[in-house]
Amino acid sequence: MRVSQYIGCQGFPCADVRHECYIVPDADLNPDKVSVVMISEAAPENPDDYYYAKGDSLFQQTTVQAFNDAGADVSSMQDILNLGVYLTTAVKCGKTGYGIKSGTIEECSNILERELALFPNIKVFMLMGDVAIKAVNYIAKRAGEGRVIPAGSTYKIRGQEYFFRGRRAFPSYLQAGPSFFIEKSKRRMIAEDIKAALNLLA
Image 1 (cartoon, rainbow, N blue to C red):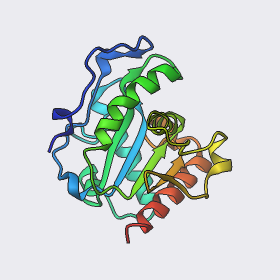
Image 2 (cartoon, rainbow, N blue to C red; image 1 turned 120 degrees about the vertical axis):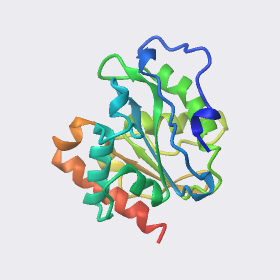
Image 3 (tube, rainbow, N blue to C red; image 1 turned 45 degrees about the vertical axis):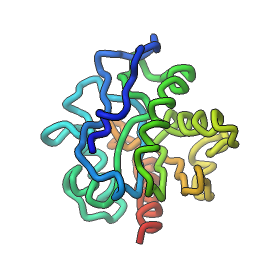
Image 4 (cartoon, one colour; image 1 turned 180 degrees about the vertical axis):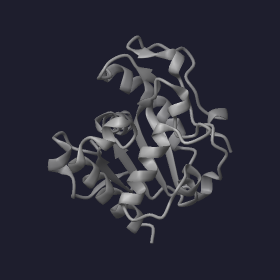
């Protein structure tokens, strides 16, 4: 199955993102074998930096390193997929600045909701950063459910158990992009969260 054949944006209504950077995952995978969904922020400015781009892309480099930091023996995006981990972004277009407006995150969460529904055997949601956390909270809100992750700084709310539709949800930090190599404390916490998530699959 290729996710891009099942979901997508129709009208591109959001004004604060770069539509020319729009990407939906195109990896060929078996949805039944996906146990973990890792959701990061937004599509990269350069499509060659994306998770499923050919070669050793930026998103691939930092994500592989994050899994290595967590003790997983991986060297490529395919190795991560083989663990049952699917990677995507909460916002499918690129950013125009540092942040993304809440209305855009909410709009794109409709696509993310349809995307998550493609995977029947999810056990863990990895929410890598505030944008991913907000997107999942919007999905829960539309369904009349409570917030999946409470408001507050990630470092304060980490370490507690949260659930989204009966599956564990981990609030963490963004692992995709150059900032991963800059903030060592966040990198350590990302590794701890990935390790905890993978331990749930053991």
